[in-house]
Length: 158
Image (tube, rainbow, N blue to C red; front, side, top):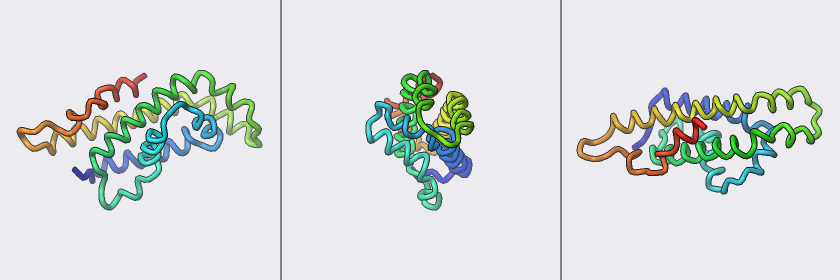
């Protein structure tokens, strides 16, 4: 199924903007890249957060969006567990001309990660609703056939 819903497209753009500005900014990105996540997770998170414009005209494939949401949920979970508690000490040792901006990015990172998780969860809920609405009677919706999606809301909520 191709997703062309305007609300979903705008939400994906907001997720990408927030991720680039507040999660993976130049102060924090080097530390993020040290997280124990495989290349596939990073690739799917990048697709969700950085390549929305590529899909604007043709729409998104629902199954691919679900995979990107699973990856984003894993990213959020691992980041909460492995990075948030130690971010201040990991980034404090890096030299920066913009110390005030760096400190702001670090101090707000937990809140920004929570906002990111909330937007991804909102995207997931919107896609499930679209999936249910566009489902052919007698067949189960796509999300029901992807067991990995069962943990998404729990991973995003923390």
